[in-house]
Length: 124
Image 1: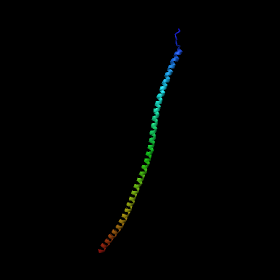
Image 2: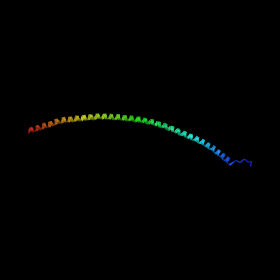
Image 3: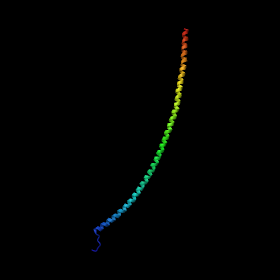
Image 4: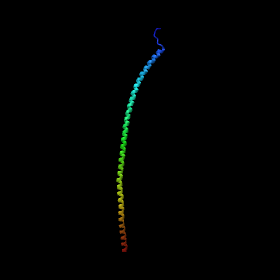
């Protein structure tokens, strides 16, 4: 009986120790994997941040471009309005001038018609 017999408790603690050691190794491996995953995700987030910064700058730039185009459009609109207002003013002046001319020319025609009618009546 001098054989070395392990007791049930000793065997349990020995197996438990082996399992704990294996668990610690697995935790370390999982820790390394998670670090790599988080580092990769962190780098992706950094790239996304840089892209967002570029987009914001481009958006600001496009806002500036849009405002400049609006300003140029307004100036062009004002130029067209000024050009066409001058033409319409000239047209209204020429229309009023032609109306005045037609009135003046209509009066002598009426006078000549009246004078011709008088002459005809005097001849009878």
